[in-house]
Image (cartoon, rainbow, N blue to C red):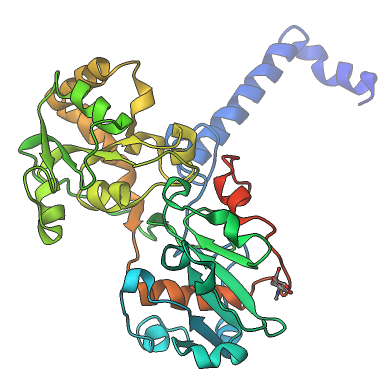
Length: 379
Ligand SMILES: *[C@@H]1O[C@H](CO)[C@@H](O)[C@H](O)[C@H]1NC(C)=O
């Protein structure tokens, strides 16, 4: 601006001019703050926002290719060969349209249709020890082989046998071609009140594979020296799956300890046992930042938050005595809802839908290398 004009404008209030400008700037920022306070989607001046996870969904995970339109769903018929019944568990093959509203997806377990199948979905745990259990006939052109696995790398032996065979991956990892997570959070269209279940007990843990030499059991042994913990499972107080949610909901805290530590490996121990039960999860698994991709930071307690089990116990007792502080762990629930999908048929139908957008040509040189990498997956 011309300095003459500036002087002309400022002359009458020459000494006030810089200060006046400063006040103007401050007012501007105050206005922005107030504006943002109304709007959760902003990252500015809103403490709650900072606690929101990066992966938030309006509906179920759709993978990188975005939402599917009705026409896309209808115009391509796909035949999906369910190569094995996962863990030998049979499921209905005719539910894609009826139950999940996904049309044009034909699931079959008939190996004679191999030649005509657009994709063969192979569940690792059923074939992993015998290479001969993989399809042996020459592969039809353009057919995808999909590697399906929901276990962690620690419990996925023999991945080397899969080198240069598969085209797509289907796992809980968010950098899979077909993502099948154990659970996720959905943004509610309208804020809703969440009623915290009545609490009469403190800490619960349900564990089926009890192994005293594991990190998680050692941590539990340490923790229970300082705070009472009720433990359920095969070698402990029995707890039937049907009663799991109602039992755990009476507890303020639940130990969501994963059996192994891997990127994105956050299982039903968190989504079902703790979050659906309305207990505050105490998590042990991948680092806190990995959890924060999927969950608000103030929705869980990570064992790395405290230098020792003793200090963790002290904090839990503090929360137990201070209801207001405890309730803070439920604030996010007015805006977000826990979603979880189960059922093998569901997994296969959703896979079929994602396949409509899968790359026409892709080879995975090493499933082992990809699945074992602890690199933080980039979206
Ligand atoms: C799938 O992978 C195989 C083996 O690497 C390859 O021969 C085939 O062309 C690939 N098919 C597609 C559709 O990408």
